[in-house]
Length: 358
Image (cartoon, rainbow, N blue to C red; front, side, top):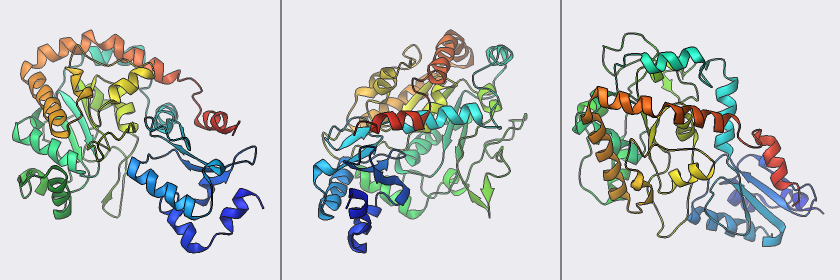
């Protein structure tokens, strides 16, 4: 009996322990040599505590550590059973190149001229999907500091009471973080491609398939118009709060890579993301932001540093930010080229290369 047959013969309760994390049976398969069982989790990333639970589930199922590996997108944990791959960089690159709704990657000469000369109606762009705790914090601070007027900012769902409670539990704070306030009560806030940006923040979607049955979904698509109307991107990453002390965790999603491919950016995420991007060959924007936030472990200290940087920049005014944008344009084009030329840029090829000797 090979290892896959062994897995398939497990009782349903034992399988279910594993399926909590790997729910698609196609993501559990034999290595090319047949010597190991591969659990494919590259689309997401385990926290350390999640890996420990998963490891125990696989052990409970009767597999020794020498019989399996996990392919994951957390680049910092170094357990012997984990292989790392950056699925999101390939996902974003391939979508930018192949989507029929995107015609600006990489920028054409005409688009470069437009982006350099176009008069903006806003300063920054910030796409928020689900109202995760950090995003509630960020949007509340932008609102409280009167910075939303400078941005094209989306929020795809109104926060629930539970969302606010989760935030307060994470940071041990009794602050209401805008709960019941006008901004969150009037959500969702949607963005579109209208040439007329004078009506406020409530824009409709660029894609008629973006919504179904009045439910709002995120998309990898985004319009060139948003890039013409803003200078920089505030990226609200999926993961922000450090859950375990000394836990190693870097998971960069399409949210960051979309910004890397198009604009100067500041990332509201876990510490170490900028260092990770530099390891991939990308450049960041220390001429615009004090990027020491990338080294700050304390969640609230890192958050306050970031929001203070945004406020400081917005208060510098249009001309100052435009000049920094123009000064940084070669870096934008450089990052586009790095992403476009990403080594082993086809995900399937890189994945097969990763597992071929297992």
